[in-house]
Amino acid sequence: MSNKRRYLITGASRGIGAAIARKLLQDGCQVTGLSRKAGELESEQGYRHVSCDFADLEALPTILKAQRKQLERLDGLILNAGFGRFASLEAFSARQIRELIDVNLTSQILVAREFLPLMKRYKAGDVVIIGSEAALRGGQRGAVYAATKFALRGFAQSLREECASAGVRVTLINPGMVQTDFFDGQNFRPAAAPGCHLLAEDVAGAVGFVLRSRPGACFDEINLSPQKKVIDFAKAGDGALDK
Image 1 (cartoon, rainbow, N blue to C red):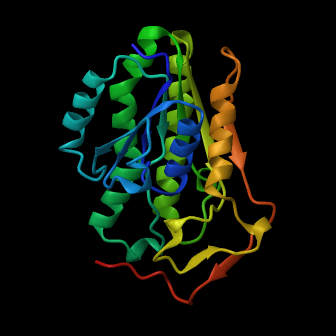
Image 2 (cartoon, rainbow, N blue to C red):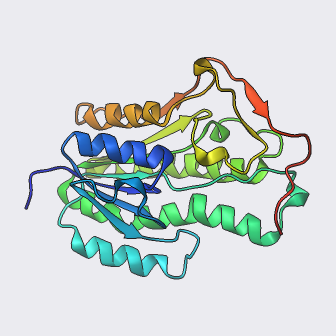
């Protein structure tokens, strides 16, 4: 078995997930990325992509089980997959509410359930959950999104208690607004000035800091924010959604 540290990242094809994967690869780790598309890292040495649609909860357990059988050991699990949809609650269809909860919350719980035994077996490892500032305070037109992130925060807190005796650390990282394609299709985004947004590399740096910390020391929760909070609005309106 290779001595290289092995990590699995959900939503690794772009944005924050890709930045985390790139950092781990630069550190000489082996990375398995779960996402719908391979993205820019497919040709990187040490990276393996697994096609996975987190909105398809019927197919997901079978895919995850097959991947677990291929891994002899796992040093860390980074739960990053998710997306944003923002509007007044009544603008959401039932399908849209379900999809947001399925991808941002339920699918990530299923991933953790499948791969935690690999870390518990060796009584070591990290689960790092990428949350959001929306897990700390709800905002206008963000009721459903914030609900998924508040739930992830509760999941992290409970999982931390559950895994402590098994030597597995659980950390939640709550970034503020990060300059990525997360905001494509939204009617707002962080301002372009450097102090008004985070970069995906900032979040990747926080993940690296957690993973490098001394065994036995656990960062329960990290809130990461731009120095200033300035939002650019592309247009007025209620953030109408496709039905």
